[in-house]
Image 1 (tube, one colour):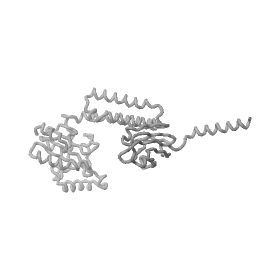
Image 2 (cartoon, rainbow, N blue to C red; image 1 turned 120 degrees about the horizontal axis):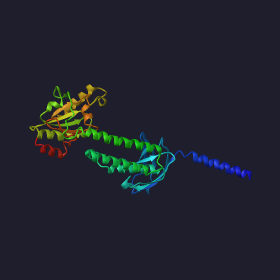
Image 3 (cartoon, rainbow, N blue to C red; image 1 turned 90 degrees about the horizontal axis):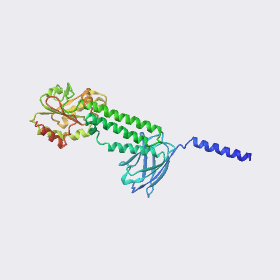
Length: 342
């Protein structure tokens, strides 16, 4: 009897230890309908972690280890990718349609609620619409919208009770950053709204010699193109801009291109950055007024420029007509210019 008791006690210890130390790998399985790919790749911030074979019927099953709990990428091709939250010890099953990648996915099993939460967050972000439309609201409507969004994001978070603490921290930080961006951008947008005095630039190097400031063009409309020689979308707008310059050649408007080429993309040298800009303008035979901002990024900061190309239209009095004007290739630009009877 004593031997049996000792055996049972030993078994309980083994079971207890197993519960205290979860397995150090992830079980991942599932099935993709209408699948035509042969492997699944799991990748992280530093590269691929695991490839998993997909059977002819679309099913898959394998194990893997991850260096830390984090959001990883689950993909069968460059066009078919989805986020997945992984942590060693999870046992996740995925079912879905390869033709409706990610949007059709159903996740189940231990740890799957983390990815469900991420999907819910993404769907909320998609349904939010264009952030510019929110920033364009009047103050009371803007505050109501932001408060509503905060409650919606909090509601998503509270809908999942067993989320990994690292993911909760990550989500809270991202939400704080997003709403901080909205509130700061809204405050700044009121300073660069339609009819407000435009922030100025001063003493930018002119390709044709000397230097120019915004005040150099007072009395004329000014269409500013903020660009750089390394920017593909900027370069694609050049032919449309050149055509526009010819069409409005005798009108009361100056087309001013401001290059933001800087040292980091020119071998660490500002002299090289200026030469790169000059060579490019000459090679492309760019018209209008060609300026180089050099080390002065005050205009970019004032207009909250985080991506280029960026186009700005200013009236003859130096006031803003549109802080985010249509591109030269956009037919709406000509409609805008013609409406001003330039």
